[in-house]
Image (cartoon, rainbow, N blue to C red; front, side, top):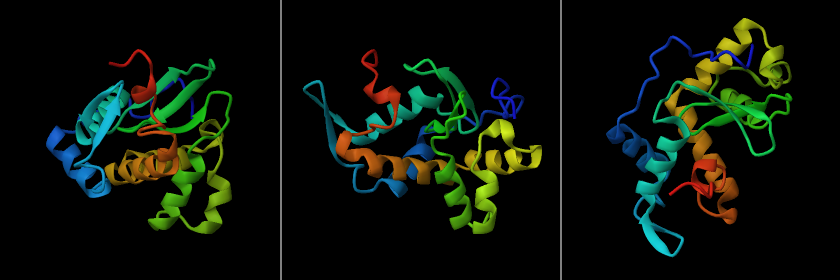
Length: 171
């Protein structure tokens, strides 16, 4: 798979309406929905902040690729509403193992197939990359990922995994 080519190019980006996003946020983050987050001394509704993060990360498009340069100078191959980051262009894997573990837990692949799939996208066959991209494009996968990342890094602050939140230029 060539990281300079969006695997979803030509497909409907599937812009997700706010009502659907709210539904999934309420399903996956029920303990946060009615809380507030303090940002620069001002309290904001957690749900509103979540919607803003999704909007900035993906334009609310469920099927999209963001191939952006991060602050280290590496390009990121990230996908979907929450910018699930498979790898950097230097082939360092980021969330690839999480995706394959999720595919196993959802019965998409077997544990025996894991070793053959946790690798840079450029090393995948077309069938392998299609299987992975189909799983990543699933909105349930994207919200399971977001919940996992949020919980894993919440001690660092809300939405610590998403540059749209902690970027100093984001208002």
